[in-house]
Length: 93
Image (cartoon, rainbow, N blue to C red; front, side):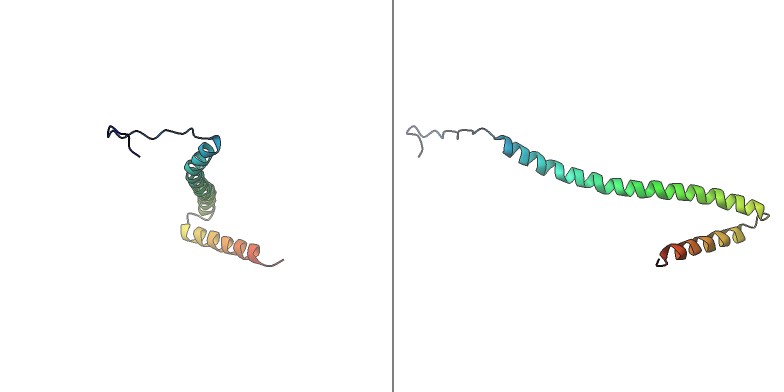
């Protein structure tokens, strides 16, 4: 029903309960938490890859120097060594 003078009255605002505020905050924070979890896993993988690459480069340089700067042979030995390690780790116990 409209008032008799033709002016629209504003609806009364109700008070928001604590459970509604909690639900709204959860809906807003859940995507952020999930994004952080995804980015965190990527960053951990990048950090581990960086450590492996750093160790690899040092091993490659030392092995190459000890073999009289035969870099191709050093890289072949490192690749064979990693494939043997991978086969060793993949074998059933």
